[in-house]
Length: 490
Image (cartoon, rainbow, N blue to C red; front, top):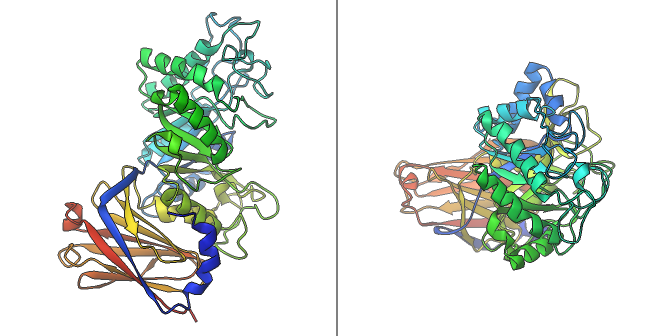
């Protein structure tokens, strides 16, 4: 499928006035990527902020984030493996040498992330990422976790203190063990975060040819195996998908991808728009994204006003392109919940008055996907999508079929989903929900007429259609047609 987002925005305005019809055929027998889920982080003290909030605020915010009935139903969380001093890292002090005996310190709190992980697990979250922004400073060429530097002992980086690769691997695996021992199984482990960027906080770099990652990944993989820790390794959380593509090609050429469970990137410098060919079948995850802060990037409840980066519909388009065109298996935003931090749009829920959680417009863009497309779902074929509409179709493990329509045009479209002979008239049911400016995940009419279901999709909106029933649940449905009649919204 071509890069359609920019094209659809240009063409979408014509959709409301066209007199033609288009048919989308959804074929559940043709399967694409597995969906691992959607999520966010509470790193850098946000988990502790969450923990310290009033209990009623906590409950409301948790329901928004994790409930599959009233919230977004997020299913992935991403914790930070601290690398600083006391109170941040499980190894705040150097053991003296790479072979020295490390004095690990576990406070059972982990800056609130341990509490937060327990809350997420209570809602059924099973995918837990532990990601290190940096190795402890004494393991790096710079001697500091917050200054640019490389892991000592990796290709091209010798240090007078020695080769710290094994010690860093031990450190990461020990962190995972602390969570696992409490019954909170970390499923994915990363050792880098934005290695192509130099901020003023925890950081560690790799070269454009990923030589440092290539020389460390086998050590980390073997260390986890030898410790009996069942965890999937991820790499490399670049700033954007273009850079991650370069890293991934280098990893694949070196044979390093055999040790990984997923390829991960952020989307600050480049969105996910096309499949990452070098991934070689590994799932691709967008593990961090957000509009940042400042003018046009603040926390707002707006769905659409002028197409700003902080608005919900902007992110509805990003998510649709990422899941359908780039074939991502997971999409995570930066932060979930914060208190009175409206200067930044990089979190999804804010207690703007100090006590009452309020979802942003971006939150609802995610919810239209994450509430009903559940972990283990498979994206299935949806051919013939009309101009102005990004269509994503998914088959859940329970047999339900979910179709997400993102209408980038300004005109309302009537979508008739033809299900003749597939079970709508034999116990199947259809529901639909709408998000646009003025409606947040609002129930909308899914009109069943014999073997067909019709929904109306307003301009600049997302409509999620879910079909369930005996014959659908038995996976007896192979295909259905979606007939779209273009009608003027005036």
